Image 1: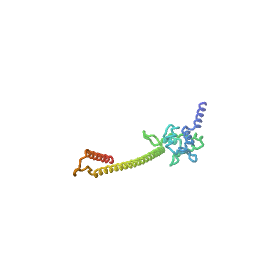
Image 2: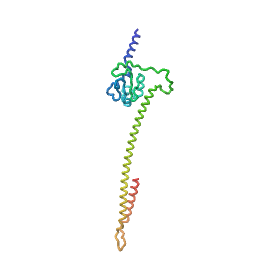
Image 3: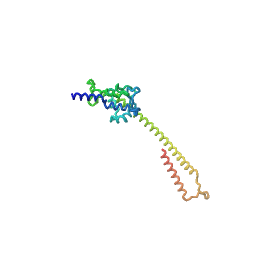
Image 4: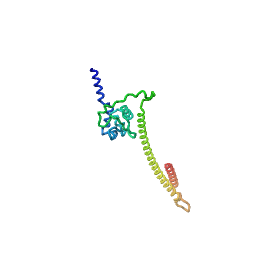
Length: 232
């Protein structure tokens, strides 16, 4: 008799205490501080994960010790939740409603799938088609985010390339101005003519003047070469 009473009591306790997964999920949906990430729908008959990436990164680890959104969706499915919208992550269960926490005790975990399921290869995990679709949707969302990041990076590199081209054009313009200045100086030196004094019609040699002219010509030529090379 005592054994029967103990069994009845344990069964009652089990039925009066909802599964931890449902309690934790209910807490997240009820918390007004997380409404921008997860909340009830307008009727309070289902809940919506508005931002799956933030939900997986910031909220799941606090209660479920993991950050896998697909695993969370699979767990919902085992408790009979259905995805009821195509354009957002909205999940519904008749016993999961706003303000009726006591109904959680009536939600039961589904039993193992029947033997009618098609055979699964040894290296494959038995995942329902609905879960595969959730995972594909999650992967598509992740790929879209990566594509957006690549587009932004491409725009940034294009802008940087334009800035570098503009800077290069400015440097070339300055080099050309210097080349023109050196050429003008060299031309004025040639046009100056020979201003040495004459004696009886013969130019007098000024000490050191020929060497000075030769050095000026060499300096002018070297400067022209260096400037020409730096402007290429």
